[in-house]
Image (cartoon, rainbow, N blue to C red):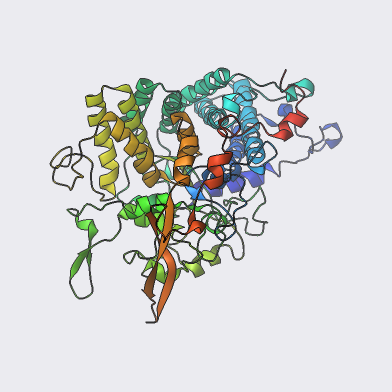
Length: 594
């Protein structure tokens, strides 16, 4: 049932915007164009309408800010220009408090909080006045939904801005000095949003029916509580929350990892927190109009470097090489390709790789309507991979354009948290919180569940673990080596270009971001050509379309492919580990530093 919740949001918003009515004695009425909290919030229907506005605020692409969060991590090379030219301030680590990304993210999150606060306050005021048990229960759930939205917004602010010290707005400002609040301590912000999330976990349902799919759930609240403890270094508490998500809410890994990246199989059994979008409505609007119910960040055109589009945040060379080296499990029949003549061979790349990125020599996976990846795209100007995530590559060029002709809109849902992420974060928590032996064994169990879903070679000695008959890498892992595998292989291979800026949070909390940029800046690359036979039988050469890493003294080194050179010099922990407080807030809020 595609985008049912979006349809509901659209219809309710239309109703909300037409609440102007009149009575016979209209001269005694309050001006209907000046709705106030006193004249609007009357019943559960009003709470529902306000909640829709809060959900709409939460779905703003500026809240997640995927493109810019990705650009300032180690996962992407970001520029609208051909290599080696680059002027992207987030990739170069030259952004400051006047930069657009932190300004937009801050504004969008506080706009969401403002809308949630209205619902929470109204729900509290109306409690006990609804006249029947059903409406009372629904009002409680609405309050829990709004408190999740507010709590999650503060969770993002706390982990994104100013070492966690941001302004705390707990209610609806009535005017004057209430509009302006000073910075609260990081501890106070954390304690506040945890209370919201705990309330949500206790009062939200675990599932919704088909018509209401897409609303937040108790499982999502528990997952965010676990992430909060993980980010704080409270590993035992984090592991407890994550294990509850794994065991208590009925989530399951999708059989195909690709079900998590396009419009196919949205709101599936792996999804824990997902922002829903649709291109079925509001096509008459400018794509940047806030009323649009599609995602207006145009990921497939401006972010991914999809064929013929901008190079907004393309896959970094080191990550491309990790995807190329993600070893398939050759004991798994899903990695066997049967040719037209009846012969068999193994897949060249893992299922996870082929679902995440498009590589020129991936002859086993279609791309934008062509049976082989290299047939569809011009792998040139040293573009050696395109993201498949967040794109409609499975629809084809014509069908993608037909969705919203000439507009940068996408209906692909944004999966913020899915079960595979919780498996990997649980693995980290038990590595850090347990003894070496017990932590490694438990962590490897859940890492291998993620890997086996994509028919990837498992970790550990041959014949070990939950799946002894599958191929293993035959390595004996320690807590340190398994943690390094999580940091530099499993997290990025499984979760790259997803979530709410978690890669930057991870690099910061591990204390390695500056070191990581320096290490990546030392790497050197060159490219191999690749010949592609097109569908019409013609052969074309994709020049330097396969990236290779080599030593700095190799004469094949091409300096146009160097990455993170400026970032390794410009990155400053004090000014770039978090987004700064935007100058727009500093200018307009006279109480900020009081």
